[in-house]
Length: 276
Length: 321
Image 1 (cartoon, helix red, strand yellow):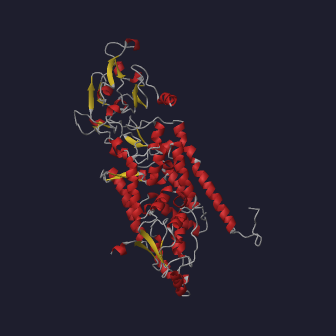
Image 2 (cartoon, rainbow over the protein chains, first blue to last red):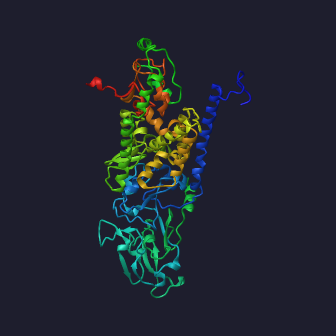
Image 3 (cartoon, one colour):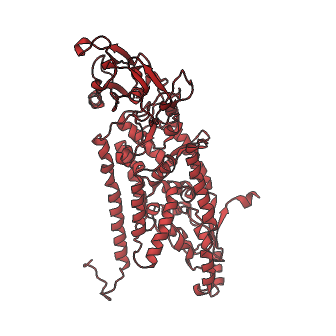
């Protein structure tokens, strides 16, 4: 400010009109630049892929999905089991974008109509899907085989997730239309096969197979066997009585072939880039 | 009530300072007749003090604002399913509604026209085109309400001399509008929707607390300590969009030169005081004028005006009757 001191009153505390204007412009420039510098900040969680979220049925490819979502939460509202929740500020551009925490509450398709897709105003959840069998949220994988009761040939009796678990599930034999709390439904299975019997897709997605002798198998030992029809809804992860779950869903993974590890989304994205 | 023209008014919305023009003969005659007769400020003091206690329109507005946002909340919490979603996009009894600027950003990012968004955004544009664009701001936007409370704190601190308001050029709002849109198109991501305190608050009211509230508090602190009403005045592209959409809206605050005392209380309470430059002595070009499109129709000036020179009007109703 030394270049233009008011000549008449050098000690005057008030700024001249010109100085005030110059400061206004400076402040305006700082505000603009400052706000726009938040852009790279908001991109960090996406670029670094800090979280692998299961997205609701029909979600577009992850980056496109984040951009296409208007963050209104209508999908959250229509979900009868409230499987969908909105992400918080820690997810940068992903703030307000829906995801599913399958271990807490999986998508059990008890809406029967893919309501979230119908509710989405932007097409971030693609309207091209017509049936739950077409959904591809991810693929289930036996992440902790040692924890799996079936592989040890153990039965399962009682509440899958205990008394304090809030998750709900639709048991068609009890109520065709409404999901009920899992803590109200006790199991009695000679060999634990909850992930198989509760799968909303059925044997196209997961079956209980005898454990292969090369894998330490013997009479009475079984293993959940994921098939091509798996949609990644996460019901198996939710009902698994092991803590933490023996079977989990890998977000956006693609079924690679029977008996093989599902390809993670990173691989798939790389392949995608190769295509284009 | 012709002058100033629509383009002139839009230029002021975009950031130009309102211009001083020679008054029309009718306005000049009124000004001449008033000369020496307008009460001095000290004569008006009792009146002004009384007017500052009147909150008729503010209370009605707050009731509507809380009501609309409560409708969102209750639609989810007790499942009355009237207004589902949040302020970026929703359905009213099943019919799509969508915020115009947010929809634009999403479609630019997607490079794809989503039919439901077009339907929703058009409906909303037509509605605010009638009711007065920035009425959205003061009658619906939850951020506007908390910003009003922050403004009270700001004014109290400013009166005690501990802080002062730092002016920012209103033109930056246009820069933000364009840059957010350009970024959406270029990057495929909607930066603004991540920053948007309106969306954050609206989601918070419906879906519960979130850490994003910290960002809203940061903006409010900036407003309290540094620049009065900074987000609404200088940043918000949603408000700018509605301001332009409502430029010809029939719901207006109108100004009557004849009874105006030019004491300037209205400009002190106004969120966008440039729209009230016409109340400065010698600035009104016509005896009766509409307040410009940037006006949020909040009614604070209507409440505070000691002479009743500013009031709500529904244009065209007299002609219909």
